[in-house]
Image (cartoon, rainbow, N blue to C red; front, side, top):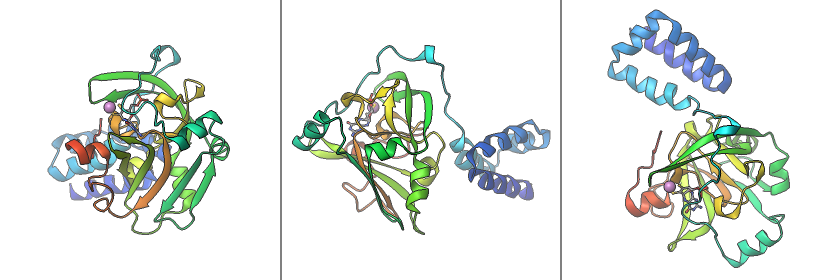
Amino acid sequence: MKDVKLDRRKLLTGAAIGAGGMLSGCDVLNENETFRKVLHSATDANFVVQRSLGSRMALAREYSEEDRSPTFRANGTTDPDTPEYNAMAENGFVDWRLKVTGMVENELDLSLAEVRALPQRTQITRHDCVEGWSAIGKWQGVPLTFLLDEAKLADGARFIVFHCADIYKGAPYYESVDLVDARHPQTIIAHMLNDEPIPVANGAPLRMRIERQLGYKHAKYVHTIEAVDRLDNIHGGKGGLWEDRIDYAWYAGI
Ligand SMILES: Nc1nc2c(c(=O)[nH]1)N[C@H]1C(S)=C(S)[C@@H](COP(=O)(O)O)O[C@H]1N2
Ligand SMILES: [Mo]
């Protein structure tokens, strides 16, 4: 039993390096009778391994073009409306910069054009807001894992923080995830929604898609991505604006 658990952990960890390989690995394991029994026997340790690596790396469902919502509802800040933001919006965001800073060996400072020229991923997914609405949209952007590799995470980096250009009722909006979600294949920094540049209401010019978590984790208006080893010294210390403000869960997995 113990050996099997260790094997599974090793497989999952190894496969996590190439996300595509991971899924086929899981599929193959699930077809294996012994493995199914082991999983269903669900000792605590097995459950933890399954939950922490297997299910967290699984892909969120992707939809077809016809499934898209006629309009993608906007929520929270729908226009940062600061002088700096308005000036950049008027200019089609040619002056927007995306910085990757903190615990990295190679800081990045990219223009929107440079972001658009990096490797891209497109996905049609469902956004679930904790307030009780959902919308399906098509997002295109750069996998966050690619940016983190370009920036070379320093040893000890544990969380990725997204800093946003809007002040929401008095505090700057921000969010954060651990490295599992940061490196999830569907975690992208998007610049397109439904084949158009993202509208201001939905986070122009760059917003996160964290597909395995609830809507408030998907930071809009992102200007800085920061790698850190702790969250307790950032803003209210709980890893996000809503976490600080009204105790929303930091891990909002779906
Ligand atoms: N910068 C920023 N990001 C944000 C918010 C916000 O107010 N400011 N609201 C969050 C919430 S609660 C949701 S549901 C989604 C809404 O994204 P949408 O406006 O594209 O629907 O953005 C999230 N990201
Ligand atoms: Mo939300």
